[in-house]
Amino acid sequence: MRALTALLAAALLAGCGADPDPRTIRILPLGDSITDGFSVPGAYRTELYRRLTADGMRVDFVGSRRGGPRDLPDRDHEGHPGLRIDEIDADVTKWVNATDPRIVLIHLGTNDVVQDARLTEAPQRLGRLIDHIAATAPGADIYVASLVPLADPVWQARADAFNAALPDLVAAKGPRVHLVDMRAALTVADLDDGVHPSAAGYAKMAAAWAAALRPDATRSGR
Image 1 (tube, rainbow, N blue to C red):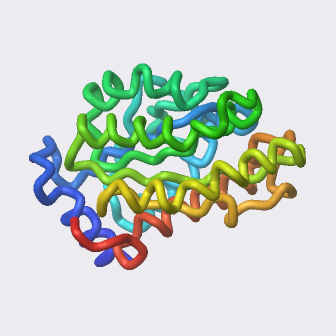
Image 2 (image 1 turned 180 degrees about the horizontal axis):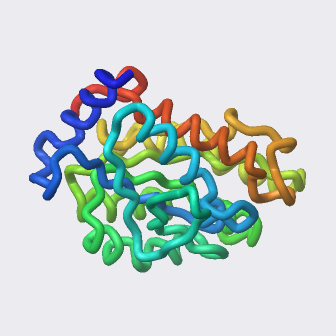
């Protein structure tokens, strides 16, 4: 596993410019309260940090916000509770410019679903967000997660329609944009309040992110 993570680090740094410490991978967790950790401080970030560093990666979470438990050494993130895709997009260029990430993890769209905010246009809004990130950090790899399950059946039907549009959307964005099937990683039983994952649910999210970041689970073309 250490050899695999070393290959990942080398691949991500190729053509991306030199970091002060070239062994460090700058990761931007981007999203809403599910990234921030509304129900569980640190959200998936605590377990993801543990998994990646245990595999030998030097990880630097980046972002304008901070939060998480004491056992999360790096608490930076870009999780904004309550915000929709368009509201995140309004500031994403500023945040990416400030943090210069090599990896961006996106779980976003739950508030669009809950608010029933022009949902037929939500995938296009996400596509514009991805484009803005890619234009600002062309050397970054962007991992887009499908939405985790929701307990409310009306909200879940909306989320299913949104998730169904993601494979084609991601495929059209090129080899540096990747889809992570977070919908399949969790069930409603993994939710704390019907929307936000429990600690066990966040651990499953972390496992899905970590699996996607492994070189044998990513696309070629880096």
